[in-house]
Length: 411
Ligand SMILES: *Cc1c(COP(=O)(O)O)cnc(C)c1O
Image: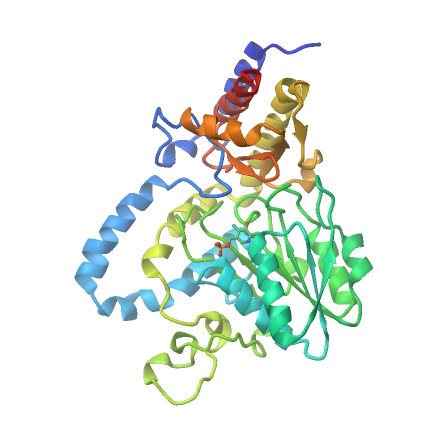
């Protein structure tokens, strides 16, 4: 049976009408902007929640302008840990006291990786993979250089990612730390974190997960999976805005012995005593270094309001349905034009985005942006269709894939 484009349009409309989360897209800024036909890059930069505009304006006039330095005592000092705790509870499957925000993902990855390695002194190897995000690879190269450690590289398949068997094949009594992305930024592969954690622990090593492409898109259970450490962005599926501070998770059992290498005054016990000598603060505050970016962390709270209201199981369900619909359209319209699918076809192993490849996609992406169809391009020649579950409609997916088909047909 062949399906006509008209059927797909009707289907998209029916999916949007039946969507239990259909009220959410309208709560994001830009959702009624006619120039943005389809925003398909929520996995790089989430849209602003409408409530964030007022929150930011009020902060400047009421809090910063009105409370001035008193704001630190009244609210700001605790904010990184308060927001961290909400991220932990609503998104990470982490009990309170293990999550904070601050710095960028890059800086937190460095701090947490160094802190983790200090807990496995005498071991000489770090396990990582060739398909991880550049920052993760570069940082670990730098750390290996600093500490004289060896990097053990896994080479995942182009359309897949790192499996528990891949990890089992390279870990040993020499492994100190395994660093992997929960969802691969390019292929969208969702790794089996629990199985990989078990394999890592069997070798006596520690696991640091990068959650940039999974937090807010897939269900995460850091506590029950026994993950040791995690870091992740808040400006992707957590809609914190460009450069919003990242989050870090340190498992409770490691906290007492954990020290990170950037010894700033804000991560010291009793920082306002200005005392001699660094003593790490109790608990997760020890991950903090200097004065945290308070303004930058405000909008995350509005997205957390939405995620808490919807619940991560419903968010994930919508995410899977969106990527399934995208793949259905790709199969019907783009595969006949020579497009290949570079993401897992099994939704259980796929995160919140779908990557497709075609030699012309660099040019096609530039033309799509001019038309208000906004996915992103990833080399060598991939378009990533990023489907932020709470802000994306099925109609946008339809418009986006149809536009790719039209642009490919022109040349
Ligand atoms: C987006 C992303 C980063 C970004 O790090 P920044 O310090 O925020 O630039 C890091 N790792 C992964 C896997 C990402 O997807």
